Image (cartoon, rainbow, N blue to C red):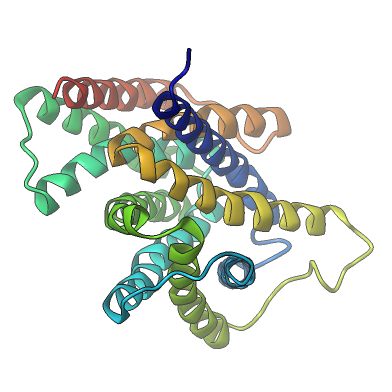
Length: 302
């Protein structure tokens, strides 16, 4: 018989599983849209604006929660600084990096979470964890540097660096967000966080300009369909599912699901011809996966 606690744990794991599945599909979707159909700055604004409006509308139909001014300010700042950084650097990184490289870089998330937890929560790092950290980061650095040697575009290394910075921002988001997932409902928390992200994205698009052929060249409906998918699934639903998962699971456990991303993104990229698999990607992925495995195994022993 499945107890309520086990059922909630199962639902939390399923929520994070589908959230990361959407994240994997998002890489391929963004690779299709950027920059031909939409600029990175415009996509940044569209995603933040859609999520902010959606969460605020949904909040009108649920029981109103009391939030302190201090918490509201903190959640807005998380959105304005951390979440905005993640989405912004993610979009620029994916535009210039290959789907395989970018997805592999994101698998360093559990390692980054552990490093940040050491500084934020003073979590002890054992010798084995240290080995795992060096292996995971080493694999990511190899991808970043090797891409510069084999790529036909000089921007590729910049794209990979932005992907790594984005992964770092995402790790910070998971850690900083954990506190508020325990205190408020997902909708209440996300409406304030995305309000902060929306304010920053509005400034960015105001400076760079709104650039998108999706709304002008309407004879091709595929870009619009892909955009709608991005806004609903990898944006609105993904953050809602992640918030639910963080209520029941540890930050490291949630980060472990990033293993899904390269499997999904790479498979679709190879099928669509968005990228080709190189030998160094296999070796680097083995380094990353082994490093993350060591880190997660040591964490689970606690």
